[in-house]
Length: 257
Image 1 (cartoon, rainbow, N blue to C red):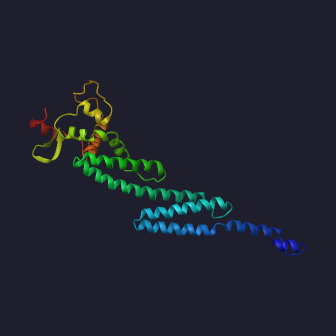
Image 2 (cartoon, helix red, strand yellow; image 1 turned 30 degrees about the vertical axis):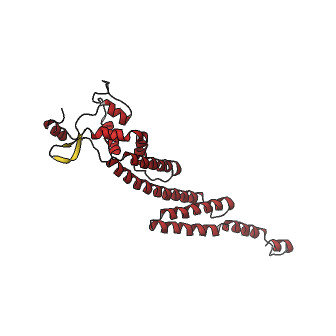
Image 3 (cartoon, rainbow, N blue to C red; image 1 turned 120 degrees about the vertical axis):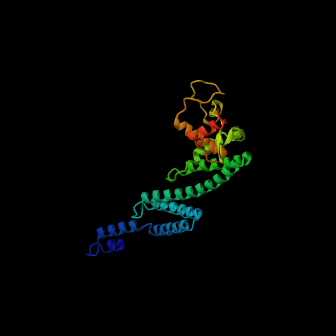
């Protein structure tokens, strides 16, 4: 068209407007090959996810993100430029990597719970440190994954803070646990939680009548539940607040004053 417009400028075939139209069309088609390749990569990622291969899926999404970013920068006038698609691909990449990381964390969490339940504190500490590192990565590297950490971040942040006292804390609670009368399966604390123990687990003392040896007082229901959750983390077992009839059984048996 440039040649026609130059050589035959005075003929009816010369058309500057058509030339501009052709140029605009060419610009709009730039990046078509890249877009087709992005589609192939996304299809590969979906297939990998179906096959439970999250690492492979993440690799596909990573390549797709890089290609879409390149297209957006190199061909700004292309019809295939899309910041929305880039964001979508990046979110899927993060979600896939985050899910792979979370699966690893869940597996290690089971191992940590088993070690804690068997009172193997030394081995448990190694798992605690590894999971805490995973959860830190999860928070820092995948802020847009929209995937819940299922409370593992909070759990292992706490366990990291007490990892050097894990054996001490376990011994402290096991020394005070007794089976419920007539039932050896569930265990119950034979005495109220003293302020010193409460502070070791909760890191603050709400009591108005301060004395390490006295039972903790002025405690809110939410904090009492949080205490039981944290004790469960330390022991690697499910722990809950006792019910009134369970305390009555213990008192009637003369185990609790």
